[in-house]
Image 1 (cartoon, rainbow, N blue to C red):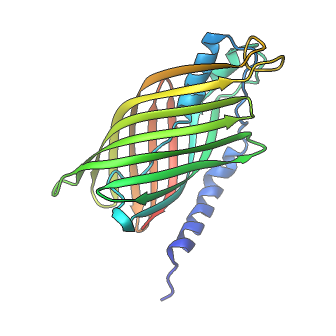
Image 2 (tube, helix red, strand yellow; image 1 turned 90 degrees about the vertical axis):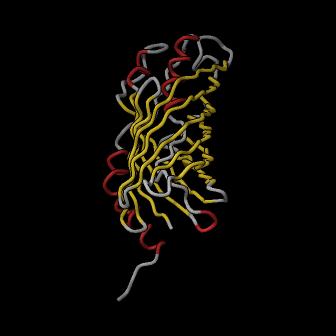
Length: 253
């Protein structure tokens, strides 16, 4: 019997995911940045965009499996951004939600340490580019109950329309349980974001100078993964000041 290899399975799965989720998402507007924001408004914008674009794990809570473990996937994320229209000059078009996509590549290293690289290629219609990563150390795996504990260090850098650049970092403690085809995970931690807002006559600040702001916030996360042989679907909800909803389709072998 003819069997598709992992690459063919991934391509077919990504095509299906793109048809069901990505095409409707393209109808949503890209991030509309308010102009003329005062300091407290810049902080609010950074809480929405900077923390909202933090890296997401969206993966089985168990380690990838050492040198042989490999994972690749495509994810969509959505977070509320209607408050942006109330900031600054007040002429920003209304936008209820912002949707972003990412490509993730993960690799198991050694001693239950995994590394994930994530990026969003720059697209002119979206005017956003992202690059980030996650380092995960699974320091405990119960031999019988399929429980696991891990520490995640994550970072993400984004550039939006060459007007706002953010650097977001965080540290989380994640607990997971795996029952074969289904795994669940939850955790908490702290995230922080630094953002540089371009100034000038048509800039984001209320002066002619560019400004750099900083925010931090407690972070909670809950999610689950459904596995179909080497393919998997993962859903996740992150909570900072606002919730972020994410879904990912990927392959693991």
